[in-house]
Length: 360
Ligand code: 5AD
Image (cartoon, rainbow, N blue to C red; front, side):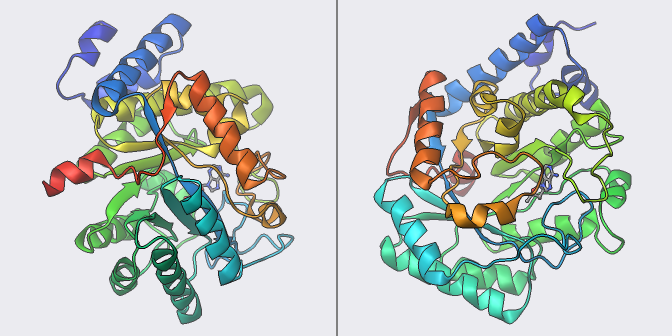
């Protein structure tokens, strides 16, 4: 069998190589994997982390994804949409503090009122920062016309997860009518509109194997995305998948490890993209996100949503930071960055190096 060093040295990893890395469980070998991916990250991007201030602007959603805490059918969730002036105040804070970029995330809606709300927010953010603030949208599947409209209004990046490259698993966790093909079509539209394009998957879904995850990595590579945001699946009470992993507490450590292994594999395969260490990692261990950095991630997303809305955006159980202010959220992440021996880049947008190279 090829040694791990032999795999790391390959110019192009095959599905079986990735499946082998994703199945590692010996602590020394895991450390080797994380160290190899971290070395790639440091070589390409330096010991630098960029921040994105995350604003969860609304939890209204027309979708009914079986895993998600803000699915349409989750009746006990109190629904909210943050008024424009409040969103812009949060964005202004991000800009003044030098975080460089904002992410607007919400449940999925395609009605004109929502499209226009987002468009006005984009205009407002452009004005308050003299077009300096980087803006990522994470607002689900939309028409190409809508993606173009928001791009023109000032959005630079768009994150749309494909969730899983395995069509059977995709079908098992979504209601009929949602499919992988339309996610892929959206990603192609986003590329045509000139966005920095990001995608991602959920890690450790019921029935998902190391081979499936290897396939996810290869699909992201083949899509040649600029950014990846992915995280472990964490069951959410009162959703159809609430009990789908059995005793979840017994699996937390393994689920975190799987998330870290995926970050490392994506970094090995795509050296110059932006990879976020997701909040879901921190939900599984207090130091989850810094471990994400040391496995190859280079982006952290402090939540700057006003605490009074946060209870409404529980995509999964135990989402951390419920009562945290923007400042606390930012300071905690900055401390995690320092513990990881890295530094936070301030007053920079932190655009994907992959994207910049492609344009060059
Ligand atoms: N566990 C982990 N991630 C989840 N998401 C939604 N529900 C969960 C969950 N229970 C992720 C999905 C979605 C993103 C907004 O949040 O990947 O695309």
